[in-house]
Amino acid sequence: MNNMMFGKYLPIDSFIHRLDPRLKIGALLLLLIAVFFDAGFIGYALLGTFVIIMTLLSHIKVSQVLKAVKPMLFMMAFLMIFNLLFIQQGNLLFSIGFIKIYDQAVLQTVYIFIRLILIIIMTTILTATTKPLDLTLGIEHLLSPFKKIGFPTHEVAMMISIALRFIPTLLEETQRIMKAQASRGVEFSEGSLKEKILSIVSLIIPLFISAFQRAEDLANAMESRNYNPEAKRTRYKQLVWKLSDTISFLCVIAICIAMVIMSFVL
Image (tube, rainbow, N blue to C red; front, side, top):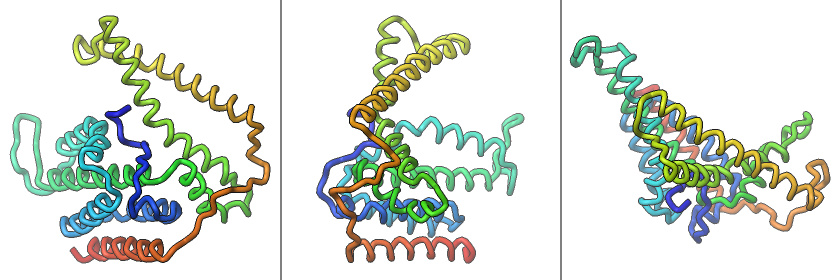
């Protein structure tokens, strides 16, 4: 658990921690849209600088950010190799047998790497600076206009917050199962393809059983406390929009507009 950062809340007193959860969720959605605009290296440098400033303001250590990126390295490497081999646009840089690398493939691969890094860091900032209860409340407030058409805003917000809460728990359970299987002689990184598949199956099955057991325990605990999603809820904590939230939101809007403009100009 100590080696896992993604989805984990850090109880630190910082400027980002004190911001309204509605602002942080909305800002993340806007920045996730902006990051997919092809704004060139200048645009990504601007967005990257903004993300670094947010990281510093949240008092999250560099080592903790690296812990959030580390579990995604395999997926990132796979996507980068896939793009290098299958994008055949631009000028041919070099060719080795049937493997051909083009300059546009390299450029798009670099862009994908930057986008993934920014997405992981921005999501980590949200989950590390927002309590699960505040996250649920913020999502519910943002989805409140859909109540008029019968959309279950509270249930959806609860499911999202619980899913985010259980990400580090499931990852911790995965590490525990891997250590238990390794103590029984199971090798996840060695052997033939068939042996690797069997070792992964031996990991997935107990992980699913553990996940369903945790879900059932949580459901029983909520039911024993007479939880009713359709009942009218009262809240001790009320969200208050402050001047710092407005200024921060304007900064996010400015960054997003700059990304859109540069995607058409550059």
